[in-house]
Length: 366
Image (cartoon, rainbow, N blue to C red; front, top):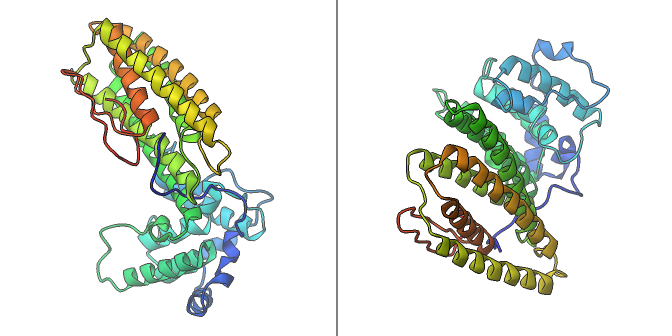
């Protein structure tokens, strides 16, 4: 069942408002943040007033081009409003937009000269305001001060997630990275399908939606969450399936297609039934343990997989008519087995060899 060596904390419960966390830092970090708090704000800061509620603009998305084009000016204006909303106590807990927006976005903008003149002291002021675990704040100060000493612009931009030390923040940063990855995959899939027929694109849209639901069900229902970083591990498991889906489509589009017989699909189906029943039995026996995989989580993922499997075969009829239904069913069933077992199943469409290896995440299709 997707066993992982370490796990990250769920984005829940005990967080202190991020802008107040400097008070828990060591004396050196407190003194540095006090010093950098004197850095003057740019004139435009005075043109924004505190909103009545948390802004819906999402500066981190505007800055990164998630679901929209990159717009540095809009990101900055949004971040000013988010910063004021945070200081007014309107910050919603446990969202990527609140943790990585506002002062965190402003820190990145001024550290990287994104649409503004580079201003490292101002970036450090915002990094202190954004808060985080005490060690994270100190690490960001050191990171940014090291950039200030460079005579040429750094090769890599400063990222707020570069200096995280807590499982709590790792969950948010993993969620952010997953949004970036989702955007990249969506672009790649759109490019792949751009020349397909309308009926093929519609069937593919149904398939990708079904796969997204399956990946989410797997991440939320089939991953042991007994460690301290479970949110990030759930996201990582979901992203692993999404990455493999894209990789499979890319390989199939190059002509490397599966070729299995009716006998092989029957064997794969028998194997899956045995492995699935064992997974349910094991989950039932351990369901009272903290963070253990629950039987219903496995069942929900299995139902989502069946919908995904059927959507794939419907799409394949239209787009890969030369490949038999038995071939797709065999490949997809072997893929499901690999995912349940938590090991990589590396498929060679020519000889259908599948090698299981110990790993921290499943490697499904292809």
